[in-house]
Image (tube, rainbow, N blue to C red):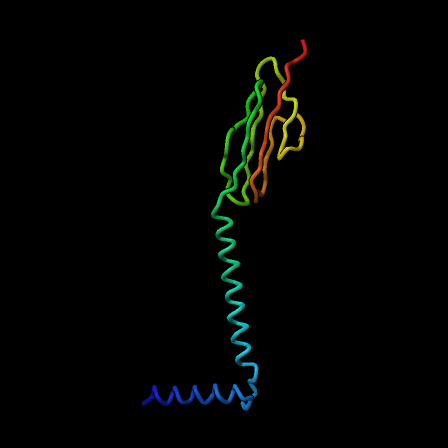
Length: 130
Protein backbone atom coordinates (compact mmCIF):
# COMPACT_ATOMS: atom_id res chain seq x y z
CA UNK A 1 0.00 0.00 0.00
CA UNK A 2 2.87 2.40 0.83
CA UNK A 3 4.36 1.86 -2.62
CA UNK A 4 1.06 2.60 -4.32
CA UNK A 5 0.57 5.76 -2.23
CA UNK A 6 4.12 6.93 -3.07
CA UNK A 7 3.55 6.37 -6.79
CA UNK A 8 0.26 8.30 -6.68
CA UNK A 9 1.91 11.23 -4.86
CA UNK A 10 4.79 11.24 -7.36
CA UNK A 11 2.34 11.18 -10.27
CA UNK A 12 0.33 14.05 -8.77
CA UNK A 13 3.47 16.16 -8.17
CA UNK A 14 4.73 15.56 -11.71
CA UNK A 15 1.34 16.40 -13.20
CA UNK A 16 0.99 19.59 -11.17
CA UNK A 17 4.57 20.58 -12.00
CA UNK A 18 3.90 19.97 -15.69
CA UNK A 19 0.95 22.37 -15.79
CA UNK A 20 2.67 25.00 -13.66
CA UNK A 21 0.47 24.71 -10.55
CA UNK A 22 3.49 24.17 -8.30
CA UNK A 23 5.43 27.01 -9.89
CA UNK A 24 7.78 24.46 -11.41
CA UNK A 25 7.00 24.96 -15.07
CA UNK A 26 10.71 24.52 -15.94
CA UNK A 27 10.84 21.14 -14.21
CA UNK A 28 10.88 19.13 -17.43
CA UNK A 29 13.30 21.52 -19.16
CA UNK A 30 15.69 21.39 -16.22
CA UNK A 31 15.77 17.61 -16.41
CA UNK A 32 16.73 17.74 -20.08
CA UNK A 33 19.42 20.36 -19.34
CA UNK A 34 20.85 18.18 -16.58
CA UNK A 35 20.83 15.20 -18.92
CA UNK A 36 22.63 17.18 -21.68
CA UNK A 37 25.16 18.47 -19.14
CA UNK A 38 25.81 14.95 -17.92
CA UNK A 39 26.41 13.72 -21.47
CA UNK A 40 28.79 16.64 -22.14
CA UNK A 41 30.79 15.87 -18.98
CA UNK A 42 30.94 12.18 -19.86
CA UNK A 43 32.13 12.95 -23.42
CA UNK A 44 34.82 15.34 -22.14
CA UNK A 45 36.05 12.72 -19.67
CA UNK A 46 36.17 10.04 -22.37
CA UNK A 47 37.98 12.36 -24.81
CA UNK A 48 40.57 13.22 -22.17
CA UNK A 49 41.03 9.58 -21.21
CA UNK A 50 41.40 8.48 -24.84
CA UNK A 51 43.78 11.34 -25.65
CA UNK A 52 46.06 10.62 -22.72
CA UNK A 53 45.90 6.85 -23.19
CA UNK A 54 47.65 7.00 -26.58
CA UNK A 55 51.31 7.97 -26.35
CA UNK A 56 52.69 10.40 -28.88
CA UNK A 57 55.69 9.38 -30.97
CA UNK A 58 58.92 11.29 -31.52
CA UNK A 59 60.90 9.94 -34.46
CA UNK A 60 64.65 10.67 -34.32
CA UNK A 61 67.42 9.99 -36.82
CA UNK A 62 70.99 11.07 -37.49
CA UNK A 63 72.77 11.30 -40.80
CA UNK A 64 76.27 9.80 -41.14
CA UNK A 65 78.88 11.50 -38.96
CA UNK A 66 77.23 11.16 -35.56
CA UNK A 67 74.34 9.84 -33.54
CA UNK A 68 71.20 10.88 -31.71
CA UNK A 69 69.86 9.16 -28.63
CA UNK A 70 67.29 7.81 -28.38
CA UNK A 71 66.97 7.08 -32.09
CA UNK A 72 64.09 5.66 -34.08
CA UNK A 73 60.50 5.94 -32.86
CA UNK A 74 60.17 6.77 -29.18
CA UNK A 75 56.75 6.72 -27.48
CA UNK A 76 56.20 9.69 -25.15
CA UNK A 77 53.31 9.87 -22.71
CA UNK A 78 50.80 12.62 -23.43
CA UNK A 79 51.83 15.96 -21.86
CA UNK A 80 55.19 14.62 -20.68
CA UNK A 81 58.66 15.42 -22.00
CA UNK A 82 61.72 13.76 -23.51
CA UNK A 83 65.31 14.89 -24.06
CA UNK A 84 67.38 13.85 -27.08
CA UNK A 85 71.20 13.96 -27.07
CA UNK A 86 73.24 14.65 -30.23
CA UNK A 87 76.94 13.73 -30.60
CA UNK A 88 79.32 13.90 -33.54
CA UNK A 89 81.88 11.22 -34.32
CA UNK A 90 85.59 12.08 -34.31
CA UNK A 91 86.37 14.25 -37.31
CA UNK A 92 82.81 15.63 -37.54
CA UNK A 93 80.75 18.30 -35.82
CA UNK A 94 77.04 18.96 -35.45
CA UNK A 95 75.94 21.13 -38.38
CA UNK A 96 72.28 21.50 -37.42
CA UNK A 97 69.41 19.87 -35.57
CA UNK A 98 65.97 20.00 -37.15
CA UNK A 99 62.80 19.70 -35.07
CA UNK A 100 59.69 19.12 -37.15
CA UNK A 101 61.72 20.29 -40.15
CA UNK A 102 62.83 23.60 -38.60
CA UNK A 103 66.35 24.42 -37.48
CA UNK A 104 67.07 24.75 -33.77
CA UNK A 105 70.79 25.23 -34.38
CA UNK A 106 73.85 23.07 -33.86
CA UNK A 107 72.78 21.95 -30.39
CA UNK A 108 73.99 18.95 -28.41
CA UNK A 109 70.57 18.25 -26.87
CA UNK A 110 66.93 19.14 -27.37
CA UNK A 111 64.03 18.66 -24.97
CA UNK A 112 60.42 18.29 -26.01
CA UNK A 113 58.17 19.56 -23.20
CA UNK A 114 54.42 19.00 -22.71
CA UNK A 115 54.17 16.71 -25.75
CA UNK A 116 50.66 16.68 -27.22
CA UNK A 117 51.43 15.61 -30.81
CA UNK A 118 53.88 13.50 -32.79
CA UNK A 119 57.24 15.11 -33.66
CA UNK A 120 60.46 14.50 -35.58
CA UNK A 121 64.04 15.40 -34.75
CA UNK A 122 67.04 14.91 -37.00
CA UNK A 123 70.74 15.56 -36.55
CA UNK A 124 72.96 16.77 -39.40
CA UNK A 125 76.75 16.55 -39.33
CA UNK A 126 79.65 18.03 -41.31
CA UNK A 127 83.28 16.93 -41.63
CA UNK A 128 85.64 19.13 -39.63
CA UNK A 129 87.84 21.38 -41.77
CA UNK A 130 91.42 20.13 -42.14
